[in-house]
Length: 198
Image 1 (cartoon, one colour):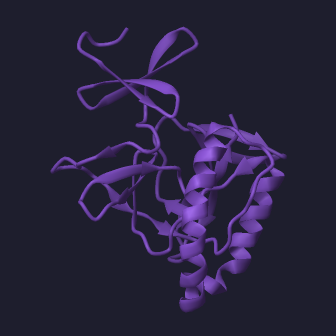
Image 2 (cartoon, one colour; image 1 turned 135 degrees about the horizontal axis):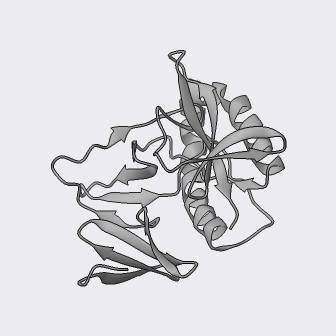
Image 3 (cartoon, one colour; image 1 turned 135 degrees about the vertical axis):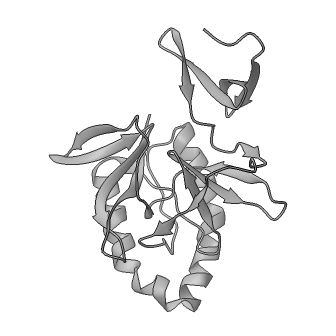
């Protein structure tokens, strides 16, 4: 049951219900607490615990997908804008260029598992908290974005699921699939692999 003074906010054709910094979605006959929708813009609270996230690689070109749905359309819009920037940055930044093989391998694995990938803008700083990724705008506002492939985080939220794809174990938070890997510091972490197509 929803709280009595909720507000309905529609994002990309889906109704979300919001009250007291908590988001809800209606699914299977019930209202469920959920994460904020992609594209939601907000001012952070003074005590907000947003951690900057690191990346295993960046993509330096735009991938296209045969399957088109709402999630894939959002990703494609983000990718078309970011891909142009990443190509230039990749040429200027040897570290990014050296990671091309990692990005290619990740892209191939994601496609073989039926996942779509969102790219990170190499020139932007990304933040993470409880399964949600944000970017900070010049105006100080934060925008919720599709979790970008290659992002590495130390921990997943408590509601993650263990899933099996093509005989291997992965971890799912909402529609985002993570794999366990080792970061540049030699520590185990969870890396965004891609998004399940809903």
